[in-house]
Length: 225
Image (tube, rainbow, N blue to C red):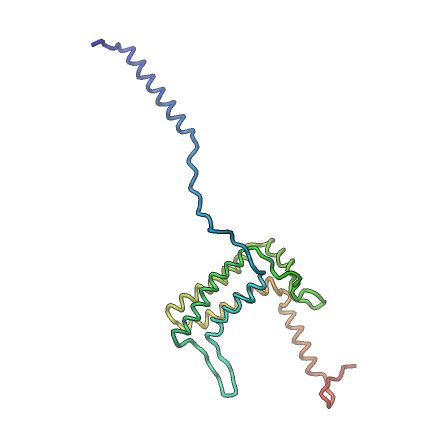
């Protein structure tokens, strides 16, 4: 067998080392594989109605499943308290909570704030509501607030769902109040921000002045001179 000299052996080893380094360098320069794409929706989400119609025809009516579940009404016969008692009562509340929690996210889909031609109560000297274009501008300027209002509404739906599981009437009273606050805070911010404390103080003064006006015997109010 022919023997390989020491010098030749060194050259062979050095060559193998260079090949290994070059191979490693080339392989490391290859781009990393792209992460897998997130699963796409089954279809595009397209709005059917405006925010005003969505509230009127879906969210407001279903919220009554929660509002009407616990209430106290004064009648001629006395105080009447309503609370859920049967499985059917709790089932109606559950339907309201699920629809509210899921339906609130429909407000995240960009859509008109009112039907075409509907300007809300935004005209005239005493107008207190914003026009749809004004609401849109406010949302576009601060989308974080809009999403926060939506999350607040959704959280009440989730809260009620948990209450239904435990059938806790006492907590349902609190949840009903939380729902009222979530709705009213959003409306005050976007729909009728003009109805602030000064607005109600002015309205109260007008009502008081109306009561103090003297009236004729025929029931008509005498105009002050």
